Amino acid sequence: MVMQRSSFAAQLAIVLTLSAALAAGPVPARAASSDVKIAIVTNLGTIDVVLDPVHAPGTVKNFLYYVDHKFFNGGTFFRAIPGFVIQGGNKTKEKPSDPGIPLEDDTKTGLHNIDGAISMARTSDPNSATTEFFICDGAQPNLDGAAGKSGYAAFGYVTKNMELVRKIARMPAESEMLLTPVKIISISRIH
View (cartoon, one colour):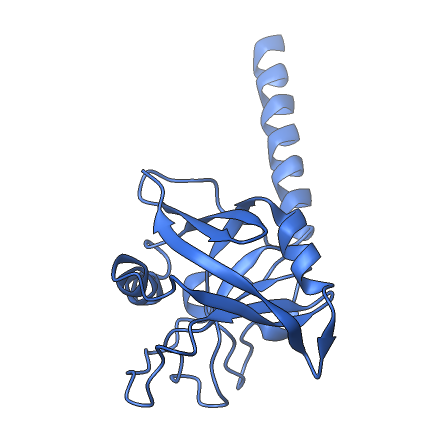
């Protein structure tokens, strides 16, 4: 009987801990074997990111297509807003004919625009994301979807070197455009 009470107390403690964690807000899922790791190598250092193809399959597939074809190599982080986002891509290779991808926002994926989230940039058309992406500098719940409002497609999270994201976000800019864009030397899979 004592063992049953002890077991019940242990289970209750686990439930209370999980409830408190859920109440604290969204957190990225633990790395799974299906996750894809990438390295964003810049002239200022490397940012490691894990992508979630299980929860955001279309967005990850689109992004990895460009990664595998070396589209981002030679691109830049060109837009920065402290406490909001840094945005990157390769404007010299973008084309108006680049196909937009269907939006996979957090209402579909469960992946939120929390601190360190990588998401697809887009126009006011929810299905217009193509190649440009951003990394959140701080939690951005206003970028998540809600009833009657499309969000932005988070598809992974920074796992190493958020300090560099914050540094880029605070570099000199005019009208949100970096005065000296940060060069993206390469984006590649980490094996």
